[in-house]
Length: 252
Image 1 (cartoon, rainbow, N blue to C red):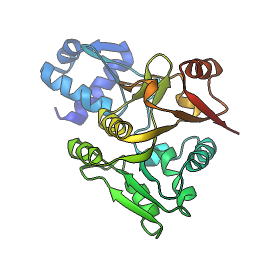
Image 2: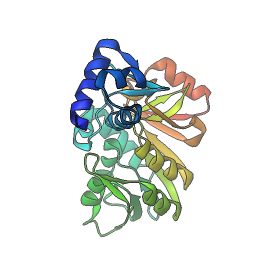
Image 3: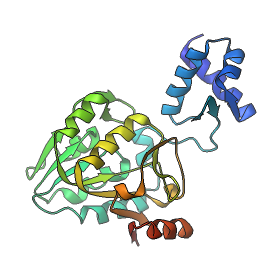
Image 4: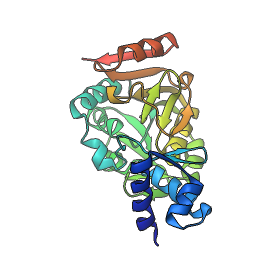
């Protein structure tokens, strides 16, 4: 049985049972626990299940992992957030831009600025490559074709060799309880490197992600200085984030 066949059976089993251990799935699929663990990690990277200690559980609303899929969701809110974020960028700045679809939308509002951009995003590269006033530093490493972005240890090493005035990042989940979360360890390591090497961190996060937690906890709230979001966010969660010391800008 190949991976795709095991993947279908694992997801079908979780649909029925909602959560299963590695050993239960091993019996169902007649595969070794080591194979199941590897499969669960790969399927979790696709955002189709949640890894738990010793197994996995079903998620009600699987996340969209591909750049093209994400870029088509909640467009008006993302556009306003991106425009507000771009207003933070001044001529002469060096900025980190991650591979998120909301961050990508900043490109339209950056084209008249004289800046240096360090990014792992191929769509950002394509959008800004012909802008004379913008210098681009493309991060090297392993290409994730679905996300149209570069990840991996070499990418992190590349980032660690630079300092940026500001980092503009996205997340899959943000809550007062668990901070910043992502569905992918690959993306979270890149974002963590951006945070570590930037003077100021601005989080672009539409309301659908406020109060939600994803698979990988990678940073606490003190890691970011400013959250830019839209008016549809959970008011209780936003108040908790403010009380935790986070500056919040809400677009209108």
